[in-house]
Image 1: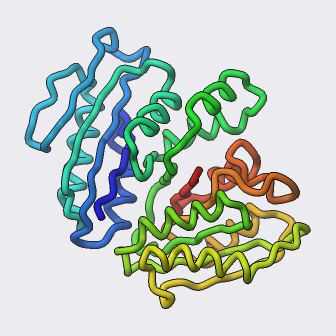
Image 2: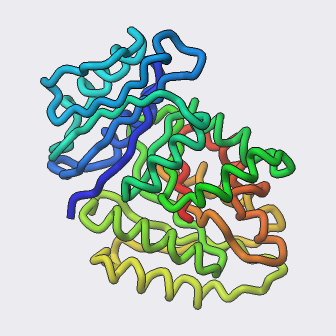
Amino acid sequence: MNKHFLVTISDDVEYLYGIRFICSFFKEMSEHHLTLLHICRLDGAGTGTAVSTMWAHPDDKINGNLTSGARKSIDRAMELLGKSRMSIDQVLTKTVAERYGKVKDILREGSKGLYDAIILGRRASYTLQWVFERPADELAQYMVKDNRCTSPLWICPETEPGRKNVLLCLDGSENAYRAADHVGFILAAQDHHTITLFHVDNALKAESEEIFNRAKAILQGHGVSEARISHNASWSLSVPGAILSEAAKGSYAAVAVGLHGQEHGLMKDFNMAGGTTAKLLNKLEKTALWCVP
């Protein structure tokens, strides 16, 4: 089944980390739909003219006002996709004038487009990190509540060649099992990647075996073979520290977490507006972070 991804594109051709990640992550002949999204800054040149243009094919022209940087980034993205191992079923390029701020515009597009994931490069993730690290900011809280992020976010730093596999972090929450469902859906046909189920034992006394069995059943429901699934439990009072340690040891291509975790106790910092995700954003340098609502 083809997946549909929304990939953000900035004005800087050097920071196409989201594009580079999907080009390296998916195996040959993977077929996907991609929408490349560029948002013209409110203070950028030419923003007075609202732009809304779609490419149905890479050879089509954009009949709108783009900065030279945006055009270079889009051209470079198409070049990277053309050289990748993927068979791109369809690529659309959408460029719109900024209306509510980039974070809100991205999430609005993600919520209405029925995308399987929103893929952000490093610079976009910095913006999101600033928002979610300031829960007392009324505007940020309004943005989060108004948009109710419904699509998984993939936050991609600069990729490192040779990285494979996904670390799926589980805390026993329903949101974590939704992360398992997302990972299984994405990796069902990507049999060159394995999945490691990871649970941090702490004061909550959650049963690792029960958590692993339920997550494994979800993955197998998507057709992921048992041979591709392993599990590991660790004891730590620092959830982000344990995840970072495991991610470093395994050289994973991606770490997947639930956007909201347990409502009470130490694992509460799995909440996107809390500490764990912000710390992972700070520390994960070569590994993508998948945050699943």
